[in-house]
Length: 331
Image (cartoon, rainbow, N blue to C red; front, side, top):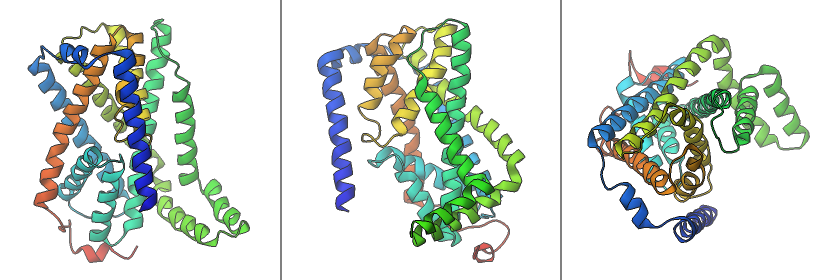
């Protein structure tokens, strides 16, 4: 508990330091308010709807991964848990709080928490890998179009990291070496845990072609999330050319990867500082960039409130498809 408190305090300090720097050295709150003074509610409603579709798609992505390893809870219940996870991700001071809630709740229902953990980890990795690939594809096109971009090497580093993690999890040869290495280091408990993880991820190995199709679906989900930012920009009256829209498909994923890092409280401070520094390469003034990303965040948070309502109602909890939950337990 002490370690968690210290971690939270450090993240809070980072958020405060970044916001202090931003508002003392780069811009003022009045400039941000001015950038948000004349919203177009029709475009903002379109942004909300687009994000809602992407969230439902993300829910199905997680559901299909669970179905592939024999989780039989009703799809409605799994969507409920996915949206509860969105709520906790936005309202807990850590962006993995929602994953912990999903794993605990569904793991308790199914009696297989490790399997739920592995499916949720796979869902995270597929999402991050597809987001990074989307940005790299946009980078290639932007380079051909001679569009200005910030340094994009973090995208290549991130892609190598995601691919390495997937290789460790899915490759029979690579993952088989880890338990032996850990035992040689006399970390027997860790070796046992790794062997249990190997057994769970082995369930996905015969489905590599299916995983490729799921990855293509994840690309669509991530594209919709970038489109949410484009629609928010229109909603704030920020005119965008085709080249600027292309630049967004690099800048928004960079922002998403940065905010996913456990460096601040829910990305507060990182989001605003990054926007002020990098969206200017797309010709967006710093106050407009910060206002746009704040508005996009508000859209996401507003949608995630539905998960809070579902959490309180608890509807659908404990129901399963096609029979007794206990018949699927024990794996």
